[in-house]
Length: 164
Image (cartoon, rainbow, N blue to C red; front, side):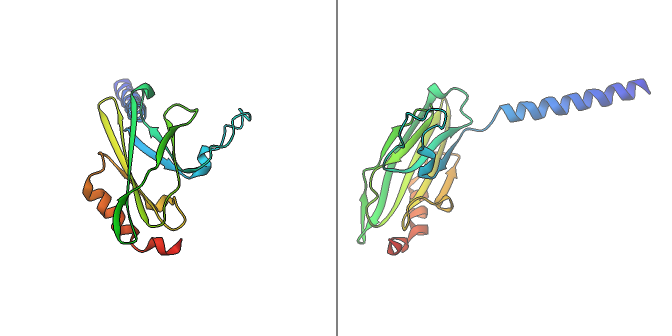
């Protein structure tokens, strides 16, 4: 009987340790949020709201934020013509957090985000049309966005520029 209790106790300890290890080895991913996420930290009221934020991007699961790199490209369709737009990535005071800023032109646009954390990669496509950023217009990817990912996002936004 004592051996059985010992094995049961060992099994419980092993399961708890496995769960803790899985939780600490979080998968690297990009996270996006609405422009209000660029608001200042309430504990630091001297920092003003970041103007012209279209949406905010942060690293999720990156153990060493000094290894976090983020790039973005903006592609879209304006008046039936394929174009690129100039939106900027601006680092916010919190390490690993960026505001995507600028004026989104009329049309249908997709921001393709590519992130790296050491040797890990992640990506996202963010559709911008109509009223701008919407969570349902975000596709999180376990890889850098491919041209097919961008095309799929643009196709999902077709006609949305009519709501502007």
